[in-house]
Image (tube, rainbow, N blue to C red):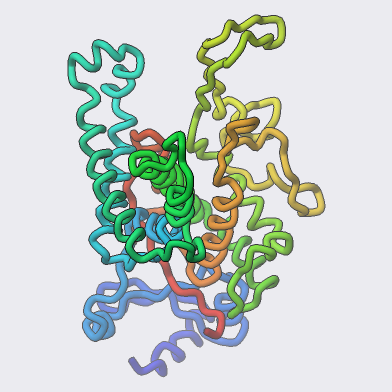
Length: 393
């Protein structure tokens, strides 16, 4: 449209005024001071673009919100590449099937019927409460057996080990008097890694994105730090974590705040003195990790999302002893190091390129942080908008 009439109106109404363009109420900025303050002074708050009808037609509707579940794909593919020695195309039916089955199993494991089965196994077996989970697990095993067979055919007898599956196959080709590397055991090992190695990291990344949409000021500060440390083009690397204390603090606070795995079941393997109590061998022990991550004696504002929990007065990252999302001791999560690296690279890379916003018509405050019912405390099904950031790229 011709801007001349708008410029003339500014002489009457000042550098900032409102007009109706069709049915859309629009704010108009004129003059150096008003335009500079809006485009530069607001940083990310004015980085979006309004829908323009003709461009939406040209681009066949333009962008649309993406479901949070999409963020499961990248971390899961990293795990699969390590396990199977190959990265899957995101449209690959095997990849889609595995993700779908893992999702189904996690939802089923969180159902009251399975909890009842765990408490009363005989009654649960009589009522067949375990059958839905076992059916899904058997479908996963069938896929894993097919991948195992395909990997056996392509792996030279003494070739280099390029994946976890390769390593298990190589071990099975040598002397195995105790039968530790039978097909059933290999499949069982890979099944454990698939279940434990995809859900936790994928769910944490979804939470991180959701919380950035919910807390735009925190997101802006992360992006300012990324811009200073990395510039507009260089991709983040693992060693950059030391130059990004606020980003690191935000990721730690995400993991603390969501308490993804609320407890760590253990069992005494011998008579154990625990403080003033003697626990006989075989005693089940339930360590509530969420009670540590939300402990009022350890965290200033445990019920609030606050990256300051991991920063000192000078803005340096501080490691807190009560940060135990990966558990602790002999059974600490074996994939902790990998999970930390994955989360950092994916989170930093995502925010370096995109501003995460609620869908049109929804405020940041309206985004729901109530966990969905499942084995892990995953976020409920929601969508976000990813708006490309303008940094000269």
